[in-house]
Length: 495
Image (cartoon, rainbow, N blue to C red; front, top):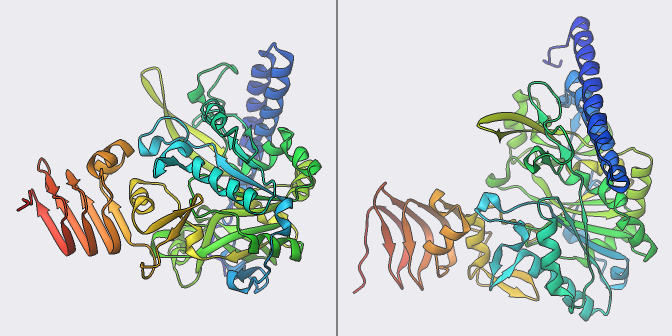
């Protein structure tokens, strides 16, 4: 028996009435903004965006009234044909590369790592950025197989202008780069459920890009989808710009073409660091993505368990282009809405706002023959923090044609690295660790406080360095730290 409390009829009636009032007030506010746009072309684009946003908002109100958690009793592990092992794919050959286009999700800023501008321009390895590495990978592919795989970048209004300048430097490379923008939606005031902006020219902080689930709508609206289909492209490989493991894999591409699947999601085995990642389930006979936000509170610990849900979504997705066109034109993509609460400064005060987002992984249930492939961990190398940056810059990986390859001397998976708040910004990280330590034999590293590393430092086993407040620790050149705990304000002297 389900322990969920059923809502009473009167509660439903009250919420439905509140929803329809909120919807009509939102519609009026959006119409007012649309009426204020005088330029014809700009107005047409803005009206399309606001109509899409209104559809999302109305769906949010409906979901809120009826609740979005899934019935736990109906959740099943995926069937064997819904999640397959990478090692079972044995389709070799490069003949399908002519059908492929690659898309990087490039809408994010590097603010969480203390950077200005698109995250994709953060230097990750040997003076090269995320974007440089992606370009090198595809250029190498195009040269080696004499093919023409284009690279698309989905920008947001936050990253578009900078990206346009950056891609100019690749003009002489053997790669075609095309960019398009995702939608620009108004943030919603938490209390009144009305749009924060009053006109389309209001401050940029009043708007937001609505998550990567917007990819389907945006690629169709921009004309890029039709362009790719006309060129004979069939498959789009989508990944986050900061996942350095997301390279073109011909086995997966060939498997997709051979099985006529419209959508493949790459999954990888969970570790204790990934317990919040979305996972594939079978729900009422349909394969779909289960995110932590959809899990009833009393089952969250079970969801995080590595035993019950053994793998998670890497957001490396392979999607059929004609299927995207069919589903967008039929308006049948209904991805779960993720309400993201934020706080923004308006004048001298803080305002609580909501932004409604969707994730492209949630679209899996709408595609025919959709399934997951459990890939090696090497295909999931995201750089979200300075701790991740330390690993990708270190001697754990060798760089080949823009691809990071694990050094054969490394035994086992990646070490666990936790750098404290003083390393959070990339500039502070570079100042404190100007030379990468050798970590090939490292299992675990924790560093907190005011710590600086010299050159040629080697870290092995478990190394914990905790510097007291107001103190400083210098790790001298050539130090070899193996299974040690360093605390206090140690100044290790060279001799």
